[in-house]
Image (cartoon, rainbow, N blue to C red; front, side):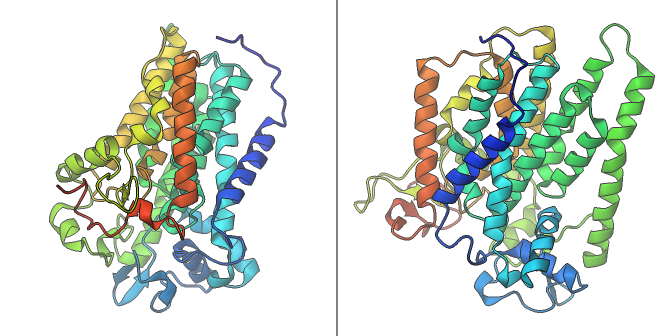
Amino acid sequence: MAEVDHRAPRWVPLAIAAATFLVLLVTAPKGIGRTHTPFNHYALLADGWLAGRLDLGGEPPAYTQLNDFALYDEKFFVSFPPFPALILLPFVAIFGSADKTPDGLVFLLVAAFAPAVLYRALEALREVHASRRSWRENIVIAALLPLGTVFWFTAVQGTVWFAAHVVGVVLASAYLWASAGARRPALAGLFLVLAFATRPPLALAAPFFLMELVHRHGHVRFDRVAAAKKLGAFAAPIIVGLAILCAFNEARFDDPFEFGHRHLQVVWRARMDKWGLFSLHYLGKNLGVMLASTPFLGDKSAPFQITAHGLALWITSPFLLFALWPRPLTRRARAAYVALAISAGCIALVDLLYHNTGWVQFGYRFSNDFIVFLLAMLAIGRRRPGPAFGVLVAWSIAVNAFGALSFQRPGWEKYYRYDVRPHIYFEPD
């Protein structure tokens, strides 16, 4: 293991962001900076705000194919949690309307900052003595996010479902940075509630801050006063943020706890009405997609075909196995590792109980919700990057490069089975 090096140049995060943006731009669909995406729900939501309304003001544009909009009281709404629309708001104002805003390019730029913020989070773990990785090793681990995980294909899409993941990863990384050592409680609470307002499962990352707080103030005798002050600072932005979200939901759906997904006009509406948005009923198929979804091999038109439910996590990012196999850890490192593992596990469980597998996708896109915590576990775990790790990283980069370049791109259709019905998860006999 490399010795701790405190001389990390200040320009490193900016360099990571610039390099990431270049890679994403080169692998993004042509024209991403010239026009809007076909599913620019966040831009439409921001456009409505600028016009002084919460609904769309009519039917969604034809180019959206009426895909994933909520219908309530004879009005159409964007049901996705709203924070990404706030990011687009100034751009929609500048360009003049949603259909003139290159939303995909904006989210591509946001995505470029994800590994940069993750790098700062890994450095924060080093500063509080939870990690012994050097800053150079942290650069490598941060680079695995845009190159070795499904974040790559996610980032170049720009459409509403994938844009939420992009923003969520940035906010999760910022939350991790602020929570390390419980040093910045107010910012940790702010980033957590913004993450919830983007990807609700990320609210289950709260154990990391709380466990860091307990560890910091409970070495010998628990300092209740100091812990209470930090807990209050952590909770304050969360309470304010949740109040704003509840008011937003009440104004749209007459229910402070309804984002609108119960009013979606989708093919699986009957399933949602019967089992709800979250249920143990969905666990089996979601586990199957996450851990056992392999390419179809029986079609003569291509050597393999990827189901619309995507590839299993161990196929797209097998190097993550090293995150689950740490070396013996110090007391400090073990506390942080366990906190990260609990947070990642809670988030993953919520995703596995969700009614949707992530369909349509290249790989298990919901892993974006907890990938930041797995990479932090990899950093803390202190496993040396030997030949086996190098092979798995090379495989991950190759697989995810294929996904970024081929997913929903003209000319690559033979490698995908988009025609498979939503309830078909594995290759038929």
